[in-house]
Amino acid sequence: MMMYGGFGHGGGLILLLVGLFWLALIVLIVWLVTKVWPGLGHSQAGPPVARQATPGAPGESPEQILDRMFALGEIDEATYRGRRTALAEMKAQQP
Image (tube, rainbow, N blue to C red):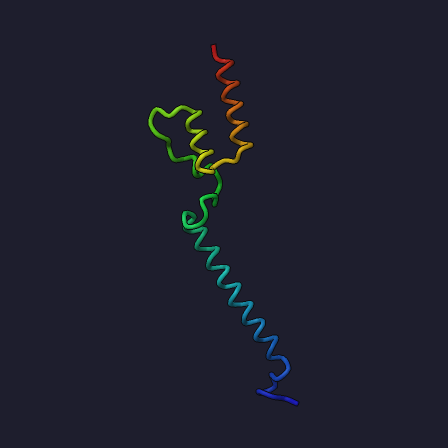
């Protein structure tokens, strides 16, 4: 039994494919927008190197810069502790 011009039994598949097409198109648009304007996404979006390019306050010590980065969530606790340890070792080696 053929209905709707021969699409009686396959119409569900066509509707599914059309729905998947529109879903993929929306996902692609959202992905492209976040790549063009990365500031619109989460604060954690993008590599930390890009966020470190902004200078700190004048006269800010390396420890203060590190503290600020940790407070803003730009680095995680393990990175923070590792860099703090490295800074302390560098200061201990200085004459």
